[in-house]
Length: 244
Length: 329
Image 1 (cartoon, chains in turn green, yellow):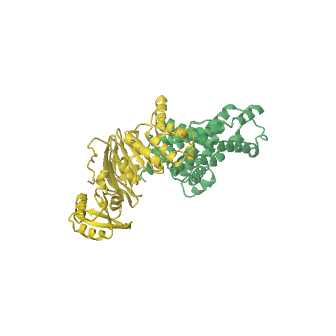
Image 2: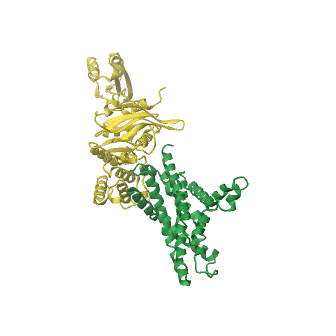
Image 3: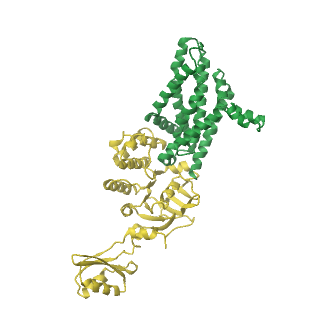
């Protein structure tokens, strides 16, 4: 617990010690705003809600989150600091969780800084704050799932570019697993229950359910278990690297 | 006295082992990087771990500190087996990995704070310990600089500070003086010597003078195996040049002197040096390293050959090192 907290503090601090944090936050805010107003037709819809804002989050996360996650383990391997880190009295689960929580908290900060869009919609009309809060929670959970995938991919390699590409591809597959891109690959030969199961893995489906304003326990459990699964795989990968 | 097999290895002093390796072996695919390495180090011992590059020094240290899992064998630190009780074992170790890695974007001070905090040191105690080590290793002037901007010498010292901040019982230092200038090397050796009374220390190096300067014991490793385990003095005694006598004789007497000396029963060989200022230095090598300075002097005096500068050689570690680590033909 204590070591997780120490690792968390160091990792979060390291985002802000380099330009990474500032570049990420500025790009995220600029893109989120641009997509909402231009592609999302925020004004033309004439509705006081943040649907056009949240609907782009999965696609933004798709390439921004693997960029945050790619350095987590690959960079430590590249610079050799992993040898120092893993010979300190820190258990591997504590290290994995500390790193993940720091990155997640960082995403949370970026997400929280989008609050002017909420102020805007409140100024323009009377939005349902409950739906907006639920959407923020959903977006944060989804960011966590993307991050856990990215962290796991980062633990597989010492090359950050490979970590980024792998992370983006796996995140993409999870995002669209309910869509024809993935389903058509399975339909025709796989039995229907398998196809339904794959389709139910879709981040989009679960996210859009939350954005409608209902935080269904099943959706929360879905994202929670996706995070847990990939963090577990992350622990296994770091542990395996010891006996390579 | 090469120790092998998985019987409990002994410390040099016979005291309780703080760190003990038993039959440590590591395979990388088909390559055997470390092959059945066993030794134990007790409090007060400084073990010099010697070997050519790629002999398995770093791999052994990585296994001893729990960074790599051994293919076979175990490492125990202060009674805790590194694979079974890694956290307990790691608490007792200060480790300087090869190349002294540190987070480049952190400041030296922030990095030491992190290492101390992870090791459960907090509050005033943390401040006091960091201040003490910064003072001892003279890091004060770079404390607020990012580590990536530091010189090689300072980076190495930050790595040393990190390994010492929690006052560990066991110190494992992989090439601690690599990249330091002669003054800094001297400082680090003095520090190691100062610490050695209360700790068990392993340092790896390929600088042989370092073994002489700080180590109470030296293990030579080649191709993953221990080929010698002895005191630095004991290693020197294995040199062909141990107790050899160098004597300078004016020409042309040196030829006759050489022939005469070779007849002496204690003499194994006589090497002839270059001609300098009308004199030649003969290096008289004894059989089995026995003391022959009296015999050489006596032989020369008996024939009334003039000579000056007679001195006894100490034996050459680099000689021994080369003989031990080159593949046997």
